[in-house]
Length: 123
Image 1 (cartoon, helix red, strand yellow):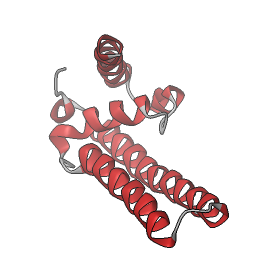
Image 2 (cartoon, helix red, strand yellow; image 1 turned 180 degrees about the horizontal axis):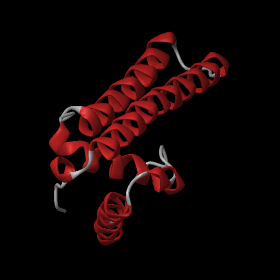
Image 3 (cartoon, helix red, strand yellow; image 1 turned 180 degrees about the vertical axis):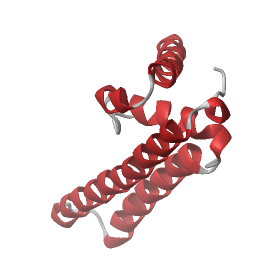
């Protein structure tokens, strides 16, 4: 993957940042929905409160690790990789890239294809 964020136009950089910000919020929303669903299931379970707590704690910890992997390197040089990862996580629909210049869109789509090929090799 080639990092060409610095080569993007100001308009493309603004669009990329806006998409990432919107999709970070979506990522956290999905996490909270998952935790709510888990809490509802745990309330109905016959597990001890201690076991319920551990299950919830482990889910939150795993989510935190996922968020860390996705966004800890939140700098301009990683924006296109972050956006490509968000597409892989279905936080971004590829049609949302239509506002970008064809060059920027092609670069991101190329990165997504590369990441998908690596995922399929690891599956």
